[in-house]
Amino acid sequence: MRPFDYYRPESFEEAFHLLALPDKTVIPMAGATDLLPGVRDEAFAPDVVVDVKGLPGLRDLKVLEDGALFVGAAVRMNELVHSELVGRHWAVLAEGAGWMGNEQVRNRATIGGNCCTASPAADTPPALLVLEASAVIKTIQGDRRVPMTEFFTGPKRTVLQTGELLAGFEIPQPPLGTVARYVKLSRRKKGDLTIVGVAALAYPQDGGYAWRLALGAVAPTPVRAPKAEALLTKGHAAERIEQAASAAYSFCSPISDIRASAEYRTAMVIAMTKRAIQGVLEQLEAA
Ligand SMILES: Cc1cc2nc3c(=O)[nH]c(=O)nc-3n(C[C@H](O)[C@H](O)[C@H](O)COP(=O)(O)OP(=O)(O)OC[C@H]3O[C@@H](n4cnc5c(N)ncnc54)[C@H](O)[C@@H]3O)c2cc1C
Image (tube, protein in one colour):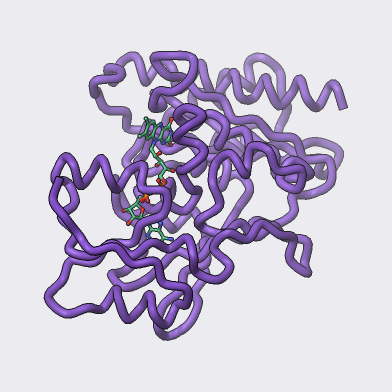
């Protein structure tokens, strides 16, 4: 594997200095579960790797004054899975994180790395989308916040500019009575990348329920499905669920790859959307 220099700065000042080193390819690193295989396969050719895990706030998992959850970019998947705090109002994020890879990967992989890699098939973005999270981005000029609906700009592309770092996510406290599910289809039950992933969330509103749906692995970026959400607010009869699942499909442009053909993905978008909606309805009935 190509050699590179490794730094673990403890301040953003130091990190920004390293990221701006002249004539060097400098790449941030968190758990390295995407980065190191990428260096091995020559998708990345860093001269310098900047480990972000020692930066202030990046390992934080805490409730902010307004009741929102702050999740630092370097929080690991298994920390989310086992966190009592996350389980309180944001359990769908733990559910997404729990579907990721295997135990070893979840012990290293971070939520920030999962989003910065910007794989359409990543498992935490659908949950972040239905929770209406925002990314907190550190730049030399200061912080900026970007809604997760605008964070992904294409496969492997995000709004992050060279020299910027993802600090974490602010996730509002969902409305009272919210329930949510993330369902994933992959070739194996656990430990494989997503063929179709769907997050669904509902909460009581005006005597009925408001809905949010997000899909992964079926378009160039993870997507919300507002037409399907609007249909579900009108009721949950079997025919309505069918219509909503078909409407969700209209936001997708599935491709064929080694995991599934476009035709199979198309059929599965509809089936998995229905499964996510049913999962939410079962929780609502049990509540
Ligand atoms: C065996 C295996 C199975 C996997 N299974 C799944 C799966 O089921 N589902 C899934 O979604 N993923 C899966 N992955 C992919 C990977 O584990 C995740 O995407 C992981 O969350 C990446 O996080 P990381 O901390 O390891 O990121 P890294 O590899 O450290 O970084 C990934 C990218 O993000 C950038 N980056 C990281 N942190 C920051 C930051 N704070 N600011 C700016 N840029 C940053 C890096 O420069 C790099 O480009 C799997 C990987 C392996 C090896």
